Length: 345
Image (cartoon, rainbow, N blue to C red; front, side, top):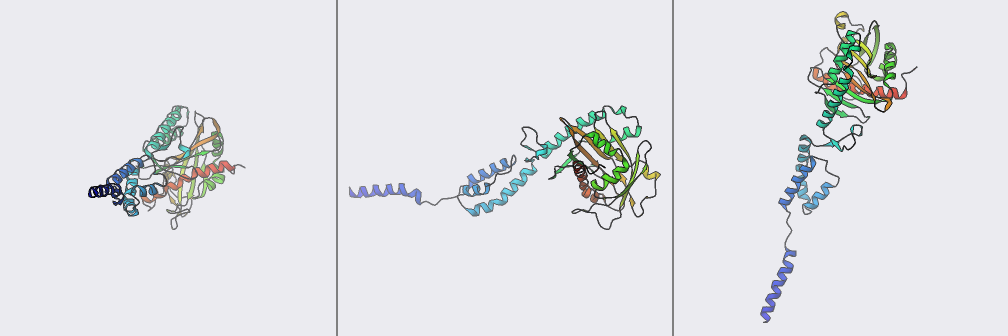
């Protein structure tokens, strides 16, 4: 009987203490499932702060496992971004109810917006009497409404930068909100001599000098510019300045919005010799400013600045396209000009 009680006590002791004495093992299959779930979540949002600490706890407090799996987390995060993971949407582009926008969603929304604007502005093209002005207006909005525009970035100052690839020389668009009415913008650009004297030196950091050559029917302008540096601010050393001749139109559209178009037509053939010695003659492609009034804010204007220029010479196109994005900053400086009112007087 005593031997039977001793045996029972031994069995109970094994049942009660055996589990506590057994070593803990990391749940490898559970961890794999958790990381697969992380990959799914990363497609929708960036992992919250403290996720790494939580992951260590899931691995049974084995830091070595977490370190080994860290590269996997990075690969999953990169894959999620490549698969179209959502990124934080800048406040300037958020719509009521929006949380995030993918790059594709942003491009589709902006495409629909541009198409609507272009349709509104070109509906009354027949009211523009000057044939060349009407042609330049149509060319601008054809470029503006293209479905090939690609979003590049939104800078800390609120300027959106877009790029239109496809041609040898890319077209750049800068978008910014200006604290002025379209009418004020029209009045500012209406005096081309004042533009060269008060606006260009403050808006375009590469501007050297310019002049008005003719004002019959439209404005014929000539100006020289430095080439922007590839890295950082300032101009590229060792390159001669570029001279551009262009025909400029300042158009009040039927909608009350404003369009300033500037591009080189046959002017390079008519004026073959450079006006400013030591410069290289380039070609200004479809370029200009489109100012659109904001609904409910008559004193504010959404400005779309499009720039495309071939500097000619021996500079390869890929270098031109690499530095082209710097031109988008012109619309930011234009907004600052209106903010301070320094163009007046």
